[in-house]
Length: 88
Ligand SMILES: [Zn+2]
Image 1 (cartoon, rainbow, N blue to C red):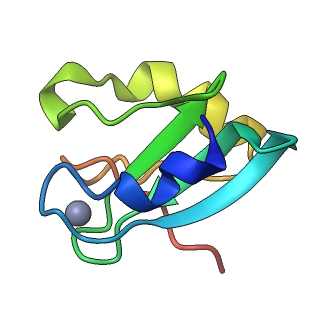
Image 2 (cartoon, rainbow, N blue to C red):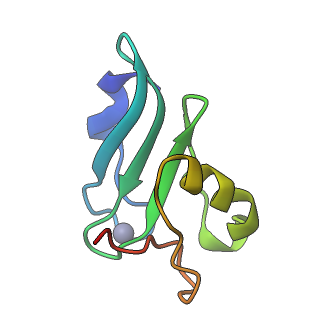
Image 3 (cartoon, protein in one colour):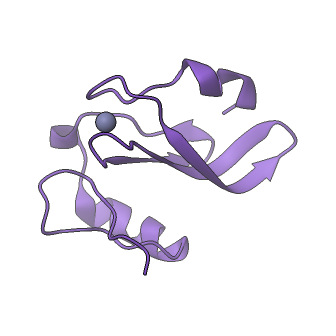
């Protein structure tokens, strides 16, 4: 996704501004990254340049876990929401 689209994105759940961590960027194109919402603590990954911002019920933790591992992040699977375990 283009960096110019960033400011138009907000949390689909509560419309809060999102925090972005970029893991892989080519020019102004973000290939891999992670949005987090400071309000509801949900996360939304960017995979192959596409932000995954679908509602909780259409996402699968089993599919996202390997991705998070690759990025050194950990899924908080005690929560129904898609949240990360806080880094120590
Ligand atoms: Zn939110």
